[in-house]
Image 1: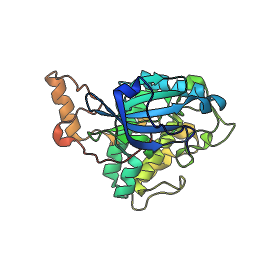
Image 2: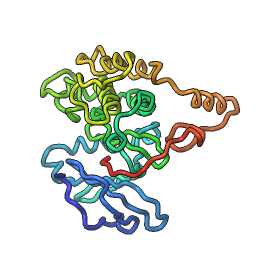
Image 3: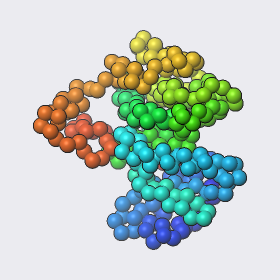
Image 4: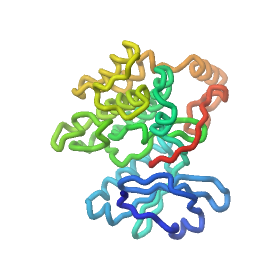
Length: 298
C-alpha cells in the first residue's frame, strides 16, 4: 500500500500536456504512471508523491534531497534522467525518461545469468555508482528493482529516495534488507559511507547469478568461479572498511571493458568523433542490447 493515493486525472498544467496511460508501479511513498505527451506522443514515466503523508512523517527533507540529487546528476552516465519537476499544493511530480523494464523482472523472467552476462550488467551499474561517488553521493538502496533499462537496453540507476551525501553523516536503518549491509540494518550504527553501495552492488551480482532475491551473504550461487566467489565475499564483507572502493571494483579484470568497447573508444578518440548526446555507453549498433517491457517503480 502506498502513502500516495491514485490519481483519477493529472492537475493543470500537466493535464494539458500529458495523458495518463497506465500505472507502471506503486511504491511505499509514490506512484509511477506512464504518461504520453498529447502533442508529440512521446511516452514518459511520471513519479507522483503526495506531500501531506510525507510532511506528517517528517520525510519532506528526504523528498527534497532526492530531487536535488537527481537534478545534479542529469548527465551522469547510467543514472535515470530527470526531465522535469512540477509541484502543486498537494503533490510533487517528477517526470523521467521512460525505462520500461527493471532488472528484478529481467532476472525473474530469464533465470540465473552466466558470469559473463552478470558482469556485463554489473559494470554498467558500477559506472553509474562511480559518477555518484565522485560527487560524494551514496544511493543506499541499490537493488535490481531500482536498476531499469531504457528503450535502447541501457541500464540506469533510479529511485533516490534513500540517497544522501557523505557530508550528511547519516546513519541508522535504510534501504531494503536483502541488499542492505549490516551498518544499514541497525538503529544506531556507524556513519554511512560509499561502502554501503559496494555491499548493494555485491547483493545485485548475487541476485543476477542466483536468478532470485538472495537470502543473505552466505547464499552463494553454485558452480561459480573462484574469482567470482572471492569477489562476492569482498563486496559482501560485514566490515565496510574491508570492502573495495568503486574504483578498485572497476579495476577487476571481470569488469574491464570488452574488446569492442575498447576499440570503439580508441577509434572515436583517434578521429575526434564526439560522444553521443544520450546517456548510453557509446557503442556501435552491433554491440547494443535490446529490451522488452515490464513495469517498475522509480
